[in-house]
Length: 583
Image (cartoon, rainbow, N blue to C red):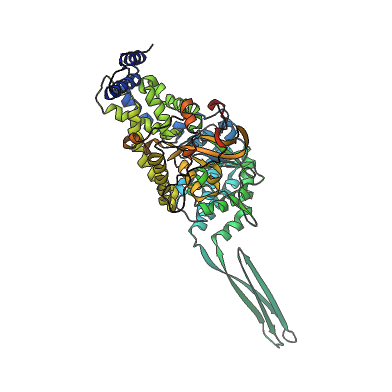
């Protein structure tokens, strides 16, 4: 038995039955601390000095971090490398960019050529400038690949490379042009004769000009009668004016671009994956148009688009007549990357594999870095998001190094309390990301979050709430709840359904969420009894109908007297958490 377990047993047996409530609280506290310390082993100051910068670097998606990429599930790397258009979905920080960097790094091993485009570098560009910039970047990447196979091969490809360069140059010129320009088209008809007498000249002409959304037509005629001497010339000039947009230029260039891409693809002789990372930096209303154009110019070619982003911030398809964009599961497959707290143990194992990939090469064991309470609290606070997990480890480790060593809380070893403090620090960063990602909706989402926190903490005195799943899709407030989950202010933990008379029927379904740790720790934690939803006993507490949240007009928080029918009861879709299928 470990030293902590022995200490816990001693404390348990030494507490007399007649101990006062205050003394029992003291004994309970020291028992929990004894369990928390698990002995006095901790990492050294030298370990801290090496680990902190490694953690900071690991929070960024780079080629170095991609080299130690930990797949959230088997086969994910191969799936994303497939020759098919795909949308790669996931919350901020789950590892989308790291996965795509890894796809790019192993492209040659999988007989793939990968063009990686970070859309964040195009952030703020108006449409269609963002599309022009994207096309130019693709062409620049293509030209670089065409000259990357040695001097002789590059020389043989010189004509194709010139076509690619000329097209990229045309994109640059189009980018500098005004959004709307007036163009003039003219025609000249002329006829001359050396005859000295007895001839006549007649002439007529018609000009038609067609542009994207604009058309102009003009006619002209001229007549010369008899002349007796000298050279005579008759001329008729006609001019038509029309407006032409940048998009007109792109439409006209689509066939040429497709032709160049096809020729280059044939020359390079390997499938090409075009990775569009953080696609949500393109304005939401413009995304269908950008994807429609890209889909048009690569259709039928061995070029696959990999569009990556947060699901709620992507609008790849707009229904209409005709529809615009790329339709998920029809024009492109979908790959979700999120590992949520619905599978707490799976998330814990995955996140600790990520951390071990950083600490093990430094000779640092997780058992010396984290207490049992710290390990559990890190998973809960991160919501299963790898980047948040690493950020919390780094912040919590700083907290652990800044306090004096004590027999109950060892210096340089992360405890649950260190994680709680780190989660509060991370909350500010999430608020900044909310402002960036939600834009005009940010204040409404903050208001919704405050309402949910009041419902949980002040009304129900706990950390978990339920929402009927149809409301998440149909109601504006339900979409707010989904947005808050994407933004990591709440985390989905389970799915329930209703039964009648003990028999399952086609009843209602409910999603269970937990508040982010930062919203109910510190002062708020004294007001509530948190539900440990990942434990069997705690999971059963989620079935309480009183946890169902539904806003009511005119009231800040709705507390339904009877959210379920008289013969309805909540039950789990999967009674055994280990039986919950993968994403």
